[in-house]
Image 1 (cartoon, rainbow, N blue to C red):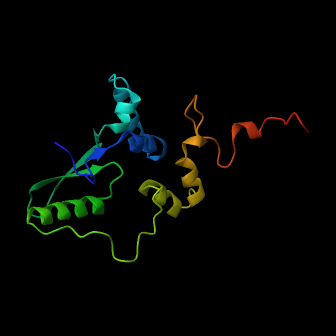
Image 2 (tube, helix red, strand yellow; image 1 turned 45 degrees about the horizontal axis):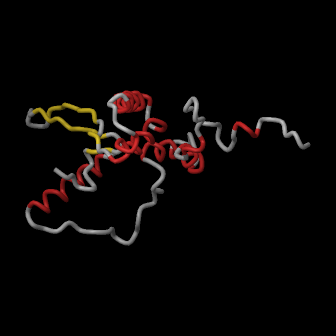
Image 3 (cartoon, rainbow, N blue to C red; image 1 turned 135 degrees about the vertical axis):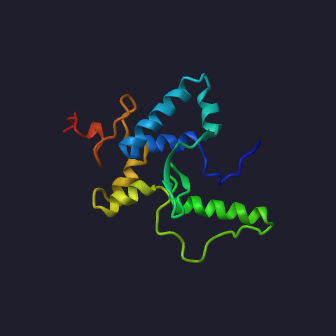
Length: 164
């Protein structure tokens, strides 16, 4: 069964890689475990890049005002408003109402390269937008260790120049 392109319950390898570098320590460990399992699956990198995986989530259980138990899922990288919007869109389409396309004319103030976790860190003053973009650039990570280089520096900048 083919999934919808905007299905929020699936995740691709590239997004897992991004979350393995920038998410909270809780989610980072979960994502790294998932990535290890995928790498051990015997799939080639080409197959992994094309594959869709179940998006990690955590469940929260609570009682509503009538005492009924409600379970909510919080998907990695998906805000509750995105989840609610997806469900509303699916409900409308089931009733034959075409989903609205595009947005209102305002557009989003969020850069597409910066995820929700990073925007929260920017708001708290922990990082700047430029540092968030730095985190998302694979060229800023040591290929051997996977560690991110310090912001705006590369390892060869510290070495003496032979031509001075």
